[in-house]
Structures are given as C-alpha cells and as structure tokens.
Length: 266
Ligand code: NAP
Image (cartoon, rainbow, N blue to C red; front, top):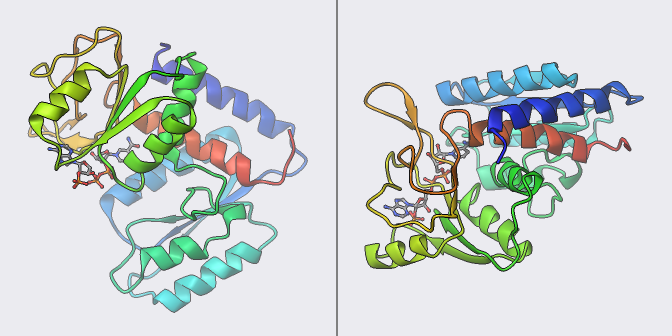
C-alpha cells in the first residue's frame, strides 16, 4: 500500500490540474455556528486544502445564538444560489438547532458532506478510506471486513460501502462481547476501527497476518500527542498511521465530493 501522505499529495496534484482546466471554478461555502476548537482546526484544514487545489471558498461564521429558523433560511439561500456549487454546515451546532433538520434541509445537489440520505455523495471519512483501498487494488470481493464502531458518520456508512463492494461485513460495537470481538478480529481481512479509544486495538488480539487495519480514531493522549485506536506496529500486512492517515484521506474525499456536486464535466 502506498504511503498515505504520498497518495494524498499525488491525488491533490491531479485535482489541481483538473480544476485548472475548468471553465468555471467551483465555489464552496463553509457555514460555522460554533466556536469549537476542533471545528476551527478542521475548517482551517479544509480552507488550506481548498485554496491549495484552486477552489473558491467562503467561510460564514454565525453568532452562537443563531436560531434554527435563521440557519434554515441560510441553507435555503445557499441551496438556491447559482454561484455556490456546494456547502458544508460544520457540526456540532448549538443546542437550539436540530442537526437532523439542517441535514435534511441541505439540497442533495450541494451536499458536500453527504448528510442528506438522498445525496449521492458519501460521508468523507468512509469515502476517503474506500478510495484509498480501491486505488491500492485492495481485493474487496468475498473478503471479511470488520467495522468496529457504528456511528452515523463513520461505522454505518463504512459498512454499507464495503458491503456494496461485495465484502462480508461484520459491525461490532460497545455491546459486543470480548470473546466475539476476538473471533471477528482474528478472521478479518480488513479492520476499520472507529471507536475513539486510544490503544483499543492492541496485540492482546490475534490478527490475520494479511489483515489491513484502517485506524480512524483520533485521541489526544496523556503525552499531548494524537493517537489512533490501534497501538502502532501490530503484526499485520498494513496499518494506517495516526496522524498522517485517515485524517488526510477524509480531507481529500471532501475535495472529491465537492467536485462531485459541481455541475462541471470532466
Ligand atoms: P462515536 O460516534 O463516538 O462512535 C464510537 C463507536 O464506537 C460507537 O458505535 C460505540 O459503540 C463504539 N465503541 C465504544 N466503545 C467501544 C468498545 N469498548 N468496544 C467496541 N465498540 C466501542 O465516534 P465516531 O464519530 O465514529 O468517531 C470514532 C473515532 O474516530 C473518534 O476518535 C473520532 O475522533 C475519530 N474520527 C476521525 C475522523 C478522521 O477524519 N480521521 C473522522 C471521524 C471520526 P455504541 O454504538 O455501542 O456506543
């Protein structure tokens, strides 16, 4: 498997060249209704990526007291604005606003995050992981996939995507017994771990030597550094690093989703 950093750099270069050839440069709007440090840093990363590949962007930061009605109005305005190709409503939203209502209000045509169930776009983290595996000729068909975690943004869409690619998919979660967990881990050809617990996947488990582990977890360790859900250097064929792994793939997938929602043809 190609190193993720190199893979992402190459893919971004390809994107840059495609964008240069477009008649109209796609524009994305990022709406933020929080002052969350993690969101600020994600948005900073997104803006860096967007400018790097040559997209136009606008960052709208709203007051924390914004009402649901006002945010719905803005979503409607963006849905109908022909100058805007796609937009993101950064989560989390303040308590007075229903995330579900906002997600459903985003037009599937402009839904960069794949929030609306009617959208063709796939949430960026699973989409990024899938693209990486596919581009590395991972043989999905008939192989055993284990998805650890069942969140709406990672576990569930990941499981669906792998199932759609003919894998035998098992999804485990906090109610899975340790005995079953050990069994599924041992028989997995691919493990996508998205639990949010440092060191969850360790050599206390037995792995299939040909197993590929994709580590989604981002955990701030006691050392102040970022750590994945898996301990490094497990005895498997490939393990994605943290940092420098799924985070980069997610950011790349977001750019690809933006391209998907534009009406431009390539
Ligand atoms: P989440 O919504 O908190 O879901 C965590 C999942 O893990 C839940 O389904 C939970 O099971 C399961 N779980 C918790 N403890 C478990 C245990 N002991 N054994 C088995 N399963 C367990 O988290 P998320 O949003 O999916 O994110 C997961 C991690 O990925 C976090 O560290 C997050 O920061 C990271 N993340 C990274 C990226 C990226 O771009 N790299 C993107 C998204 C998320 P239940 O459903 O039973 O509670």
